[in-house]
Image 1 (cartoon, rainbow, N blue to C red):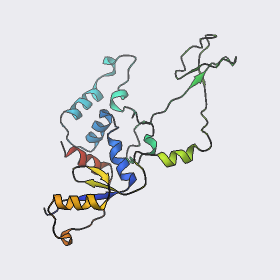
Image 2 (image 1 turned 90 degrees about the vertical axis):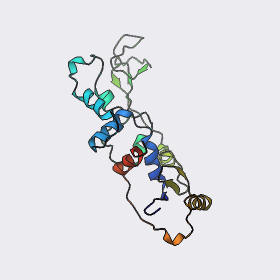
Image 3 (image 1 turned 120 degrees about the vertical axis):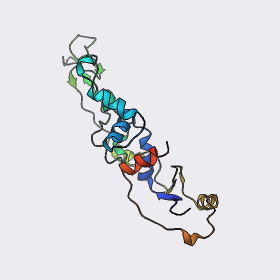
Image 4 (image 1 turned 135 degrees about the vertical axis):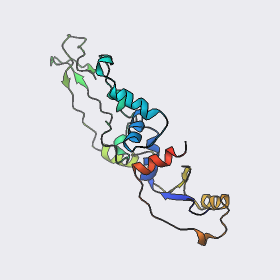
Length: 202
């Protein structure tokens, strides 16, 4: 059992980081693997073929970035500490109203749409104004798990709330009789470690 990682004590940010990986589209994960030169079956090959495919073979109403750099569907992606995903587009929606300034109250998310009342283009962009307390609400609810306790993450990526009982159960599982043989280490955890942890399970 030498050098075996029994578990890690993780704060909310680390657990949010791990859980966020499940929300990433396959194209994004494949691109990350390719950038890190990590092997995961044939997905990097498929990604590369799409990347190298001449645009003349792509439908005129499609874009390769839909597959190569897909948007994450999770609404609060910006609040999750996924630090090295700077080039992943975050979901952003813009809304437009009638450009005729005639008091029509129709709204569209497509600036090429036509106002059903006067047939003018719906190209006047609207500005969203957040309510005064939205920042406080967002801070309290950001991420996936609550910031009320420490979490336990095992070597096979089982995540559960940290407790004395769960710690004892884990020690019993690995037949640890002498706690003195255990060593505590502080480690930094980032994108590379997350990908390695996940894909070594396959």
